Structure formats: C-alpha cells, structure tokens
Image (tube, rainbow, N blue to C red):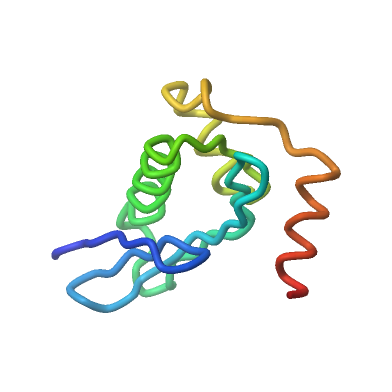
Length: 106
C-alpha cells in the first residue's frame, strides 16, 4: 500500500495507491490555518490514514509559518494527544468559527 498526502486548494488529501482515501479541509486567516473537517472513506477505516493525513497537514502548516486552530473534532483530539504540536495551536474562538462559516458560504 502506497500513501501520498498532497495540498490541493483548501484541503490536504491522502491517496492510497493513487485513489483518494480522505481529506482534511481548512481556511487560512490572519496567520492561522483553521482546520474544520476531516474524513477518511469507510473502506479505509482503521488503517491509520487520518493520523498520517493530519500529521502531514500539521507539519506543512508549521513549515508555512502558520498556527493551527482545531475546529475539527478529529484535529482537536489529535493535537490534544500530540504535544509536539502544542507550540503552534491556538484556541478556537468565535472569530475562527465565523471565518469557517464565511468560507463555507463562499
């Protein structure tokens, strides 16, 4: 099984053997990358793909000099259990939630 994580617009996507298996979506605002949705297809469940996807997305976010706002429940749990990302995580605020809503409406 070969996996690949790529940045595509407002999302990171993970592919397995060339087929998209999941994604994590975000909106960038004011030096923050606000992650609001993560999913992996049911046929790929239990293979650790969500963790691989989010790890690579967070690493790329750090490399881009952005901070992480974990609106997505999965990303929130992930950063809560991976202290190596604590230095780049900001709290979810009403402004962050409004930014997500505005981004989804547009």
